[in-house]
Length: 114
Length: 112
Image (cartoon, rainbow over all chains, first blue to last red):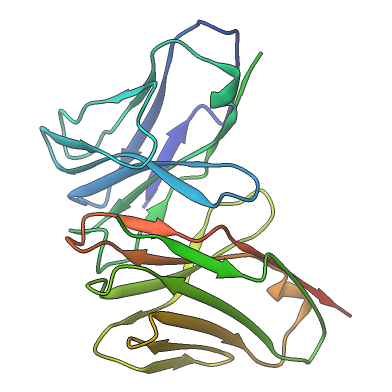
């Protein structure tokens, strides 16, 4: 049972480039989310989805897009990378809602924008 | 929206001592309060959680207490061991239960 799988683990981008961070889960979880982790700021919610075809914004959505075409996959797209997007990104999934069940995290993607 | 504050930002204890981390939240309708542990270079993992209809929950050396009136909750680790060294995050659900809001984290160092 793989759980939540993120790719890539590391990425270096140049300012202005675009890319997609992949996230897949095999637990049939309805709820999926993306967080970014910066020193001293904890985990901040970027976007989330409560099911296939349904997405919504979190605390820090600017500069990121998401889509949810299947239950399993929830990719995060950086439209035009900026140095401020240098961070560690975590994808997470939960059985139903974020508000009452355990969130399972992927192993993270360390992104550097130069 | 929900806001979660966590203190202290760093905590150093001697092996065998207790450690306490405190969090406050702003939304009185929040009803789910998990704690996550993140070891260096790894993913956050749930260690314990509590719901608003419970005041205290314990799991071996770890306990969490919740004071709904004061809107704060705390993590207690007894008999600390070097493997407890990690970053600990508290979190609270928002009013609708569709978001988890995390505190800024506490770096716990257990000195042997």
